[in-house]
Length: 343
Image 1 (tube, rainbow, N blue to C red):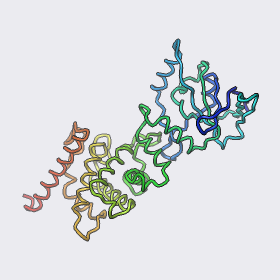
Image 2: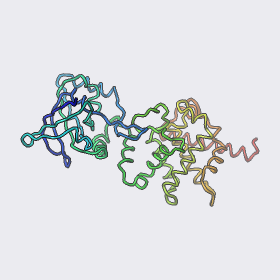
Image 3: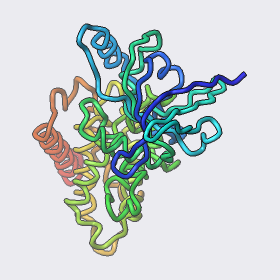
Image 4: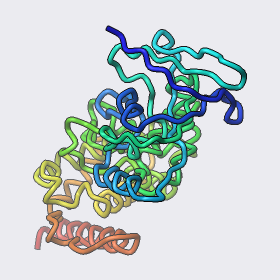
């Protein structure tokens, strides 16, 4: 049997959006609401992973004397119209009627961690609920509220930008390419990037979306490839490059926990190598996978990618420069060895 819940409130507007403001027990709001966490496998949702520590901190705080909080922010999506309606009393007062049927109806736009561990707490808390935002509009509101929030993954914000952009290839080519590497079935990065959400294959994550897109941005800047090629061509070039890396450095690639090849220092340094190979391309030759494999095979196997190996302790911009310099030295020695006949 469906459960009828009535929340008393005041109808109004938050800038250009209709909202209802009110007060309700925390355990009730917890019971009828949900957090739409990004599922990286299905690409549904948009919020960060749940942080138990963050949520428990708020639970401890809110139960102390003299504690308080700003209103919890929710949304009632248009597809749920049969589960809720507004019944006016005397303007501006109104009642929000929720016929939940046992389902969670309120989407937690900005209160996931505040409500997370309050399922047994009957403290009365203020709330503001948007009326009828669709999922994209809801994501936009979340992004504005939380874009500077401590602990919010930069990769998740990048994912939001990609979702909301009307022309991602034109507006953020580095992000377009990074997502292409993560989404293309033929890419060694396929579903291996941490987007800031939850995933069944989370333990296999190799790098973050932010790391790969920033390294890609540096590659685009160094090569200026987009002056002569499309974003799609640049994306295919980098897919071929990383495919060659994954083949030639298979042992390191298949054990990301014990090697730095897919960590920040490795990704940035190797993008520098990709820029070198592109800029050295002989006139009239195509920078395809065959060319990249041939060039990389001359030296990539001599690099020790272990966490306690050649690049141990290197980090930050200076660490990346040192790593790239070391790789270039190895490459130079390999080329000299070939010239001297291996002596």
